[in-house]
Amino acid sequence: MKTIELDGRSVENPAYCNHRRGRNWGAIVRGKNAANCERSFLRAVGEVVDLESVQVGDVLEFGGDYVTRSGRRQPDRRWWHVQYITDDELTYESHETLAKALRSARQQSITTDA
Image (cartoon, rainbow, N blue to C red; front, side):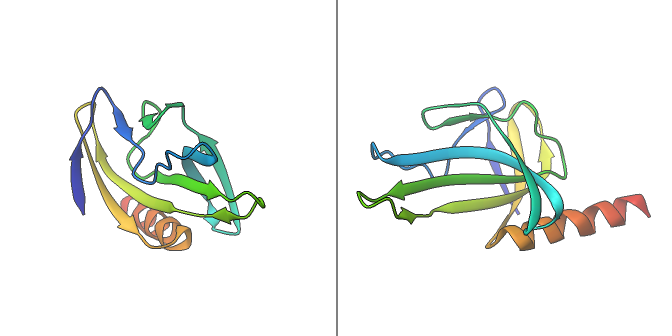
């Protein structure tokens, strides 16, 4: 797990692509699995993503895809499972894939419900 400082409940997109053909976003991902999930996109201005609606247990997806002239995407994605959040800090568990992040969130909710 990693803890980072937040600036008024906002964070810089760790996958930000500053190229003019870059496509950047931050989203809360919910669902049973990676094939059946729903994204709620977060407000962002430049690199800064607003985390006002993020709660403990949410899975965050940050993307910064570069799109070539031929239209092919070169993806750069990060998935975080939120463990703790305040206006000043965020503790998260980083995952290699969306499926692993959603599984971690599902297991945490089963543990807290039991």
